Length: 195
Image 1: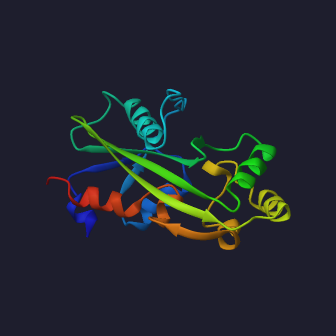
Image 2: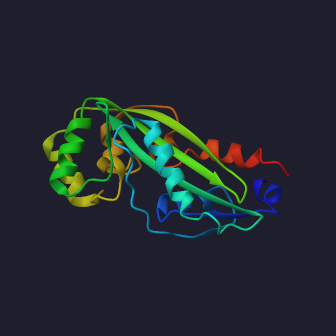
């Protein structure tokens, strides 16, 4: 369906995330992966979605001057926003434990921004999902960290994993956004491209 509409475009996903790559496969899209190392540093005054907007655009700007006429580059960034600060990927086990302890019995936001860049322009969309955790025992956190090692995930958890099954009480908004890509919004954006 969407694949036919996009026949004249080449989609490039600039993400090493296995989950984002799987979403594109599950949306039945043809795409290639192009990666560049980016230092993900943002101005300290930015808050919430301004951070993910900035980082998604930063990742896209690394490809400036390289895109061909029919190529659409897609970059993305996700953070967990809690107590007025951004929780990125944990530095180590101790940090991951502290992050999960802070999310226990509380509601946080998962914010993802997606940048679509062509030769001519770039546009950013973003999505915010509220996630409420049940109280998590220290033993449950330890078990999760030991068995799942979520050190590559913003907020130190994957909602699609064990901790999501036992710990998440409520999700308000896009579920796939919590996994790193608001697939419904990406689908809508690509569907509505000028042909």
